[in-house]
Structure formats: structure tokens, C-alpha cells
Amino acid sequence: MTMGDRFSGMDDIRAALADLPGPDAGAIADATARQAQLTKPAGSLGRLETLAIWYAGWRGDARPQVTRPQIAVFAANHGVAARSVSAYPAEVTVQMVANFQAGGAAINRLAETYGARIDVVALDLDRPTADFTESAAMTEAEFAAAMASGWAAVDPQAGLLVAGEMGIGNTTAAAAVAAGLFGGQAADWVGRGTGVAGPALAGKIATVEAGLARHRDALGDPLEVLRRLGGRELAAMAGAILAARHRRIPVLLDGFICTAAAAVLEAARPGALDHAEAGHLSAEGGHAALLERIGKTPLLSLGLRLGEGTGAVLALGVLQGAVACHSGMATFAEAGVSGA
Ligand SMILES: O=C(O)c1ccc[n+]([C@@H]2O[C@H](COP(=O)([O-])O)[C@@H](O)[C@H]2O)c1
Ligand SMILES: Cc1cc2nc[nH]c2cc1C
Image 1 (spheres, rainbow, N blue to C red):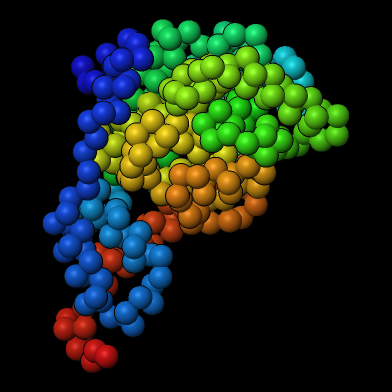
Image 2: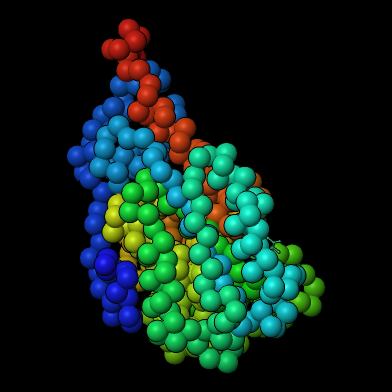
């Protein structure tokens, strides 16, 4: 049994957030010193240098390898999907889960490309969350169970975690969570999702406004924001990212939905995402503002708006390059190259 398996209510989750391990200061110091000795002009590998030092610190190894990268894809259905907030019908969620399991989705091909394992976790797909304009999306027990599923999905031996998702309607939930955490108008956070436009986009904004109005009195508590306005896959991603922190497993964040789930942790406990880097900037309208709120600069910006963990896995390729240079390059002394 680990802490997450025992999440039976909000208090257990708060306890897991209260006590977070940090990176290894010695590994950071040694990795920083090593960077200065590698055969390249100082600073010439740009963000790859700080990325490698960040990875070394969380792994507690000044000269690490990226071992056993894991992608956990969480899927769930949403009560608000009945309000025509998506360009696709809700049955696509379960159909895409079958596609992930058969190996036919974009994330399957990218996982293969970068040597990552995929675990698909379907969360009560035949039982959508409640419509958040009418009540809380999840009861406390449902929320704790979803967070515990995320926690339990993390391979303790993984050297890197990507939390991905699939859930028709979940950009509406993510926009509501972002607005609940950080304020502003619903329209600031609502984007096109799978391709919503015209009157449907206005309806999506109105749905988020109605959710914010209904839960207005609870928005001061980030975990309540996630329970009331989020969904099972968002709660599971938050649980997985929290589990990774407790195991000092570095995380690459994916797009808008993943970042909204992660932002709950940062809002509840500043610094809770120090073990996470932003994999990419999604084309979803609110993503840049959300990343700014949690103080993260995306590694890539490719116009993706797919989810599944795809942007984060592409960034895993960047991380693998950064760590390969850091740990495998010759030093000036080893190669007999003159310094500055
Ligand atoms: O990752 C993103 O930034 C992203 C942006 C737009 C859409 N998605 C994906 O599309 C689905 C949600 O879109 P929607 O329109 O049904 O809310 C869900 O399965 C997400 O994985 C993902
Ligand atoms: C086909 C399809 C695949 C997806 N993957 C993640 N979100 C998705 C949404 C749709 C509609």
C-alpha cells in the first residue's frame, strides 16, 4: 500500500500535498559543474542545459539516463458533454480507448518512436460525471477514487512520466477549472477543443459561466474546484503527477487539459510542480495563459491540440537529447580541446 491507494477523502489528498520531497541539491551542483566542462561554448545548448540539470536533480544522479519513460493515458466521460460542447459525440471516448489498446492512435506511434511504455486507464466510462452546471461533477468519494487511480497508475520504477488524457467534453471541464482557479471571464479560458465554432462555442462559454456561478462559493479551494468542475481523468492526472513527485519522477506536462489538472496542485501548494516541465504549447486558446499562471515555459510549440500525451511525448525526445548530451559528451580535458 502506498499513500495514494489509501485516498479515501479530501483530507488524505491534502496530507499528500503537505509533505513533498525536493530535488537532490548535490546532484544539481555536480550536474551544473559538469555542464561547464563539456566540449561546447558555455551556454550554447540553451534550454537543453537547464533541462538536463533539472532532470539530474530529480533523479538524484549528476550523470543520468532517461530510463523507462511511462505514458499514462486516462479516459473519462463528462456530464456536460450532453450540452453540445464538443464537435464529436461522447461515444468517441470509449472508441478511442479501444484504439489506444489496439495501437492505432497518434500516441501509440509517438510512444514507439521515443521508446515509452503506454498504460491506458479507463475511468468508469459508462458512468459520466454529473453535469457541473447542476451539481458537483464528482462526490468526494468519486474524486478521491479518481485521484487514487492516477496515483496507482504510476510505475515506481519509471524515470519520466507523461500524464495524457482522452475525454469528449474535457476542454469545457478544463476551462472551468482554469477559471475557477485563476479567475477572469469564462471566455478567456474557453477554446475550440475538437473544433467547436459559432453558436456552439457561445454555448460552451455559457456552460462554463453557469458552472462558475453554481460553485462560486467553493472556488477558493483548488481541490474543490477540481472536484466540482473537473472530471475523473483530470483528477487522475493530478493524482499521477502528485505520485510522481513523491517518487521524485520528473514529469512532462501535455496540453490544456493536463495543465489545468496540474495547475490545481500548484494552486493548492506553490512549488508542487517543481518536478514538472511544460512539454508544449497547445493550440487551445487558454493554454498560454494557464502556463503563465503556473510559471512554465513550453519546450515546443507545434500547433497540436490532440491531447493523449502527444505534445509531452514529443518533448520527451527533446529531453532524451538534452540528457544524452549532458551525460555522454566528452569534457574539454577528455577530448584535448582548448577552453575559452
Ligand atoms: O491537449 C490539448 O490541449 C487538447 C486541446 C483540444 C482537444 N483535446 C482533446 O480533445 C478532446 C476534448 O475536446 P472537446 O472538444 O471534446 O472538449 C479530449 O479528448 C482531448 O484529449 C486536447
Ligand atoms: C478522434 C479523436 C481522437 C482524440 N484523441 C484525443 N482526443 C480526441 C478526440 C477525438 C474526436
